[in-house]
Image (cartoon, rainbow, N blue to C red; front, side):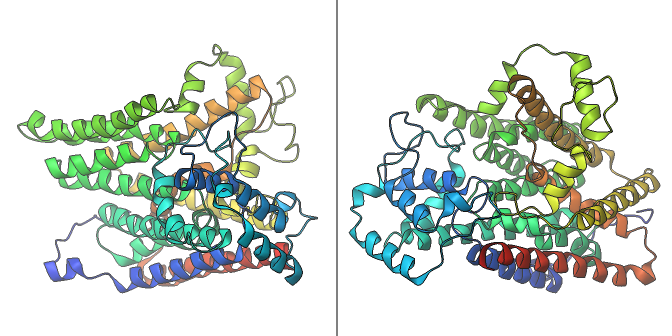
Length: 492
């Protein structure tokens, strides 16, 4: 990273052409995503049954879920889950889905006899009911288009939409790296390979969940924010950036963590405008207010919680600094003898490793499908090595680094992690229940990709190609073994 970062302005014809490395990476992403969508049995991803039920309630009725006097799911979904043993299989390694031909024929016969009313008698208080509706409205299109097919046909087509969102995440990471390192395919490939080939983003995106759209919008927002800082604030760039930040808040309340960093980036970019700051900045701020405010108003009209997690955190009990410090210490460091034990379920490790790193790399199904322990130790060592190398690269480039970009990315990451910690801390105090999962930090996958590319800059130019080949090959191997592990879990 000590090399100067140059920004080239390619000709219009080159700008329109998709680089060959990116095209190949997107093709691999699509193939792997479709493989996960087809291989994973129905509702064998975290909360996929609730997300499917949300979409079915939107399309077939009665509307947004959350009615206290209605079943969680429609009769059609419940009977389909029973037919394949989905609920009993979830999170239970000793149970397998039902695959017999007899059971299949029995289900198809029952499905033909189901009246339309049994696709619209759900809409109860399922686990996804408090989520904003944007992702579910987008899922509604493939659900409705496949409405003439069976419940599993609709499920697969909805998963394919998630694969499209993953393609957006990969392309946005490539573009983000292009703004940070210049349009240099070697470093752009190193960054984009992480969301493209790491198994957890693919597994999550290829299931029915708003998280796939969340990853895509966060990565696009990071790209647009860095682009605005690097190239200067214009009305167009400011409105595009703030609109995407606002749209992310229509997906999950997690996206409110994106707002402080976005405001910081916008303020820095506006400060750099030599004159007429208000004229250039006001449209972007108006876009953020309009999009986020649009959701708040819509939620109020519909009597929905606009941000349940944010509201619960804001109304939580008073802060005990020593207790919060003890919780944070135990998350990242070994517990001291005088501390209250916040994590009794991970006595042999640290939650930051057991929950965050392991969960962000490879935990499938309802998180019950895992590799042997030594695989996670190897991944932890590699992750720490890349993080240290990236930090060294940033330090070496400190004189030429755009500190506005660094501050923006750092604040986004810190705000998300701090919000997740505060939510879990409050749950620990109230019920002792865990909250953190590795997939919750995956909206930062674009930043993780930048770290991979920054680490590559420490390698001598002569060995970079070989190192990148090893990185891409290793990620692909981990993806292939993850698919094999899932196949063994459900089909062996």
